[in-house]
Length: 255
Image (tube, rainbow, N blue to C red):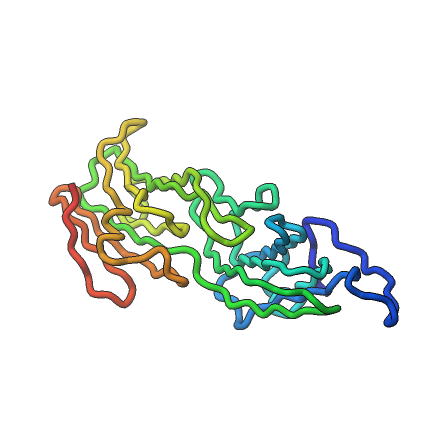
C-alpha cells in the first residue's frame, strides 16, 4: 500500500482518553479531490497555520485520489493548499513551488481553502483549478541564426495561498523546433510583463510585448481556470493573430 511521505515530521498522536479534554490532541486531516485529476505528476499538500507551513507532504496522484493524503495537525483554523501535476517544479524551503531555470511551468492545478480542524478527524474535499496557460506560438519570417525566448516576471507559486510570486521566467527555443511552432506552458501572470525576445547570440534583435497583446484582447490571468492561447506572429508584417479557446480570432498590430 502506498504511504503518504511527509516532507516535515508528523505529530505523533497523543494518548487521549474519552474523558480528557481533547483540544490538545491532534486532528487527523484527510485531503482528497472532488473529481479525478486532469494531469499526471505528483501532488503537494501544505497546511498553513498563522501564516506558516506547519505540515507538508508529496504523494502520487493515484494515492491522492484514493484518499491516502492524511496528516495529523493541531486543532486550529488552517489553510490547506494543494498543487497537482508536479513533474519538474521544485518545492523551495517549503514555501514556494519554483519553476526551474529555463523550464516551463508544469501542468499544475491548484486550490487553497480554509479548514477549521476542530474535531478528531476532518475531511477536506478540494476543487482544483487550472493554474497554467498553454501558449502555442507560430513565428513567421524569423531571421536566420536567431532563437526565441519568452520572458516574464513570475517564478512560481506561493505555497501559503497558491498565488504567483515574482521571479525570473526564461524559456528558450530555436528556429528549427516544430518548423516554427512552439508550445510553452505559462504560469499565471501578475501583470503584462510577458515578452518574446528574438535573439542572436546574446543580442536582442527584437522584442514582442506578449503580455500587452494578450491582455488587450480582454483575456484575464485572474480567471479561476486559465484558458489556453494560440498566437501567430509575422515579424515582417508586424501583426499578431491571437486565438483563445472558445473565442473568435483577433488580429493585433505589434510595434
